Length: 373
View 1 (cartoon, rainbow, N blue to C red):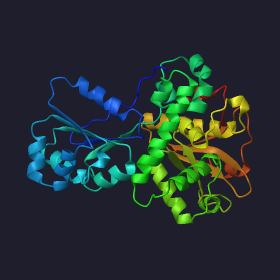
View 2: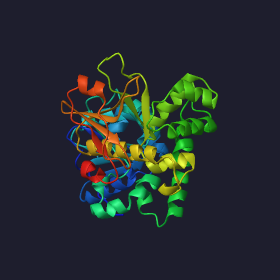
View 3: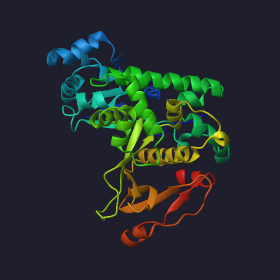
View 4: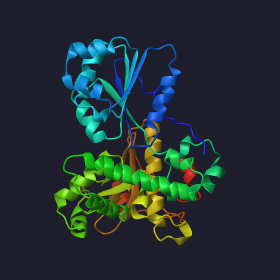
C-alpha cells in the first residue's frame, strides 16, 4: 500500500533547535532521515550512528574544543540511534550554543535513554517529533480501498514493512521478528529489566486487557512477582513505544474512577504477535478489543499529526457507567464509543448531568473513516 508521511523533518526543523525524532524500531526513522539527507544537495553533511565507537568516545570526553572542531566544517549533523551515545546531550548543547545556525538531527528508538541524555542539557534547545505506525490519513488509497483493507489493519497493523509485505505469512514472520527484536533485545539492555519471560508475561496480560482498567496488583499475582516490578516493566514498555497509557477522566466526582489506567498498543499487529493470534476476524472473540485499540490509536495519530496537543482519557464510574474515549481539545470535550457493529449507545446520566460536552459519537466499521479523516 502506498502512503505519504504527514509528519516530516522539513516541517519540524527550526532555527537554534535540535530536532529529536522518536519512534519504535523499524517504524521508518532511518528511511526518513536518509531521504532528507539525500535531498540536501550542496550542503556539507555529517551522518553517523550511535554504535560508532569514535562518536561515543568524542561525546563521552565532554571536551568542548574537540566537539566544536568536529562540528565546525558541517552545515548539517545527523546521528541515528543517538540513545547509544553517552553524554550526547551535553555535547550537542555545546555545539548548538556555539553554532546556532547548524541543523542537528538525532533519532532514537528509546525515549527512556535518549530523553534522559538530552533532557536537562537541551532544555529550550530542541523540538521533538514521534513517528507512529502509518495513519489512515497518510494512505494514498481511496476510502473504498481502505475499507477493504480494514481486516488487515486490525490483524497485522500498519508498520511500513507490514504494508509492503507480499502475503500474510510474511507479515506474521516480520511481526514475530519485530517483537523479539525490541521486546527482548532492546528492552532487556536496560538496567533492572532482567527477565525476558516475565516481560513477555506482563505484556501478554496487557494485551488481553485492552479496553479495561489495568490492575498492577492483579497482574503481579498472575505473573507471580511484586507490584513494583510490574509497574517498572510497564513504564519501560511505554517508553520503548510498545504501549500507550490512558488515565481516567475525572473532575473529582465521588463516583468516578480516576486512579486506574488503560493501556493500548501502538500497533494492532504487535499486540496480536504478543499473544500469537493472527486468525481472521470471523474466527475471533476479541474483535471489540481489536477495534477499540485501532480506533484509539487512529484518533491519537490524527491529533498528533494535526499538532493539536489533545488530552486523551477514558471515563468510568464505580456503578458501571462508561465512555471508551474522551478527548479534551481546544476547551471542549469529545466522547467516543467504539462499537464494531452498533451505531447507537446510551449516554450515561452522570456524564450528562455534570459535563457540558459534545454528544457521544459511536465509531463503527461503517462510519469510522468519516471520523478519522
